[in-house]
Image (cartoon, rainbow over all chains, first blue to last red; front, side, top):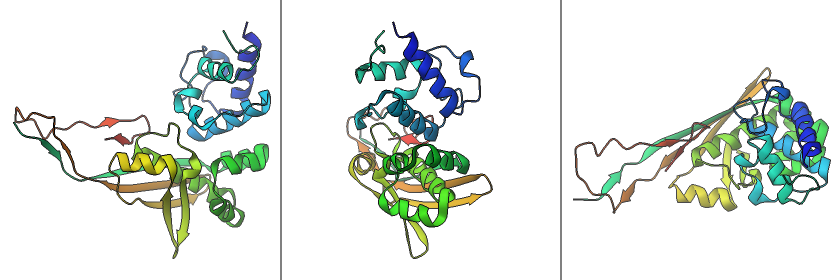
Length: 87
Length: 157
């Protein structure tokens, strides 16, 4: 399953997303922008994901929705064929 | 029945950026961050003005994207903020330019500022008048055109 990837996403968000709330209080589908993530923070989250899984987000995936929730980030990583990201 | 014409309108976008967030991104991701977000021209300005200068440019990019109405699929480097004769100027390329043209955006003026912990930018442009030939004029509420406001506060055409 994808629990390890989800845990890693949560850890990256805690470090880089600068949320206004504890990431542990968010569900996988909660809106991260509503939780305080800025556009700039979404860029650093993207870079942190690229470092963590040695992938590169192509331009067409750089959408606000890609980083709008933990589930969306996991789906994007699955699209990039990150092991364990598929549900 | 007649076509409805939307008159030219002023559109604004603004953005606020924490300078420390930019400094932290530079410390953490270095050139990878700089090369993904800023053009060589902007990076040169950042070497002189530091994180505050880059934070103001990031805010300007976001402000311009709010004018356009979406950032989806837009390379941040396709909104370049340069300086000419002491004033900031915006150059749009690639998808940013295409989207701006699609929504009828005229030349973009931008103003930058920073103080203390934050940098900010305001972008302004005129949106060209548009005609909707499919609209059937049927009532007196025709002028009550409703914009679709993005979460950023910008508008879509």
